[in-house]
Image (cartoon, helix red, strand yellow):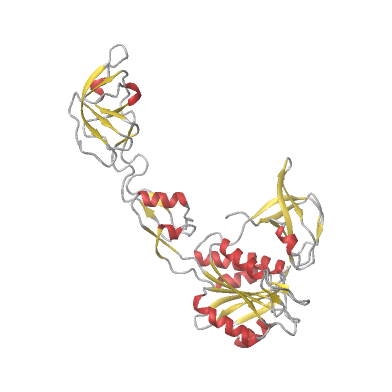
Amino acid sequence: MGGHPLTSVDDHRARILAAIEPLPDFPQPLMDALGLAAAEDVVSPIDLPTFDNSGMDGYAVRLDDVTTATAEAPVHLPVVGEIGAGQAGLLALPPGTAAKIMTGAPVPAGADTVVPYEWTDRGVAQVRIDQAPALGQHVRPAGEDVATGDMLVSHGTVLGPRHLGLLAAVGRATVRSRPRPRVVILSTGSELREPGTPLGHDSIYDGNSFLLAAAARRAGAIAYRVGIVPDEPSAFLDALHDQLVRADLVVTSGGVSQGDFDVVKAALSPLGTVWFGPVGMQPGKPQGFGHVGEDATPIFTLPGNPVSSYISFEQFVLPAIRTLMGRTPVTRPTVPARLTHTIGSPAGRRQFVRASYGVDAGGPYVSPVGGHGSHLIGDLASSDALVVVPEDVTEVAAGTQVQVLRLDEEF
């Protein structure tokens, strides 16, 4: 990549997002829509509750018939029926009578109040009422919770359990949303071995494909971890084309620098549809992005060192996945925190420093974790944040307020 000018992180991300379109939306069953963004405004077609119903087990009455009831002078009323939830045989209550009613059962016409069991002798043919209720007591009126025409879910809302419960409660069986993107992850390198298999003296285990597949899944995508591809352009292209049928997006790791065995760059450069070049960031300088196959599937070619690969995913792949899903914002927001230790940074590159985030009496703080090496996956696993050091800053003193990406926070 010698001779190529550095592309800024923001410019590279903008290039990517300009080439990504949200996936088409369609009606999806409620349970399949969990965690997806609604692609429609949903208004309620009904009232909730749909009818006046009892908030207690007791007796439905007319207030005028029981307004004088006391323990010393109870009111006695004949019981003309029993109303259970979903078993409403009594539709109207005659004056001077009571009806036994269960919680959630519809209040019959003419009744305006429910007397709880605790204020009665729980009579069957006749009930004694020892205390006068207030008008409307223990009656849950129709539309008290939701009225017909109320907005339930607005376009772009990420659908959680409470949204889905509400949609089901008003009778919706589906909701329009964009599907989970299908993300194919390929690791390249003849030195790689599957976890659980023996290692040779010159081989390493493939952690990247698990790291990236898990990151894609956490982002809401369907992740297909293909596994290891040797350093042979023909083998890489065969594996890639086999996977395109099930890919909305492809992510590779490794093989994009300037080595003699950088298979991804060697295989894709002749296509002319994938850009390779240096991005002004540390770690993660060698990057590639473009399109492959008949359907012009987006492909991200990330560097092979695990820290570089993960931070590149955060900066470039995650925004693309969220764009495909119609999620906003597409980039992880930064939060301010106090830096506990001085750090240096190379001029002209945006540095992402692994760190641990916490809160003490002085407010949020962030502490660097480990060294700067892009191979230090142990330090990455011990981190839950990245300190973002701007391109024009070469040193940040302890005690300075810095911008931080909190890696485990939902947004």
